[in-house]
Image (cartoon, rainbow, N blue to C red; front, side):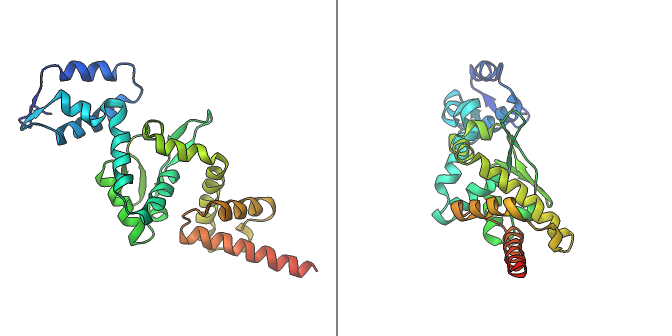
Amino acid sequence: PAHQAGLRLEPGLVDLLIRDVEGEPGALPLLSHALRQTWERREGRTLTVAGYQASGGIRGAVAQSAEAVYEQAPPEQRSILRDLLLRLVAPSPEGEPVRSRVPRRVVAADAEHEEVVEQLVRARLIISDEDVVELAHEALARAWPRLRGWLDDDVEGQRIWRHLSAAADSWDAMGRPDSELYRGGRLVRASEWRDRTAPDLNQTERAFLDSSQQLAEAEQRAAK
């Protein structure tokens, strides 16, 4: 593709690329990202070894791009960016982070959230169509220390949020019946988690939890 575009590769770059991807799981998308970052650092029409090394290489280019987006985001958008990315990762049965497809309406419910989604799309960190958003590179959750730290900070909270998001979406699609609301221990855990972490819940999730609490209070009053 580089040759077809009239670009040249500095001698030694191909050998370096092959050496770096050898034995690396999921190497192709990482290679694609690293090469794009190398292209952005090209000298004239030449992709250089120095440009590749400055990108962070196979293992560091995605993390470096993600950190740059985070650092450049206004302070008020960083929590939105954090919670959006956390929605896009789920634990595998072995406990390793894997990417998760999320409906776009869940993460881009207003103009501010839409802008954060578009920033990540422009940085090629997530991919999106009209309906679904997902990480562009599953390795991002392993390669970017900041995201891995967020995931490790509250593993149980991520499980609560994932269940809450699915339950709220189903409740809304069914016409918001009381029968689908949280009760008992699940409501207590979700409410405590929300009070403790102040997550960036969307409108449907907030309505679901609020309605669950209101129903629980009404049932308590009726039982007296």
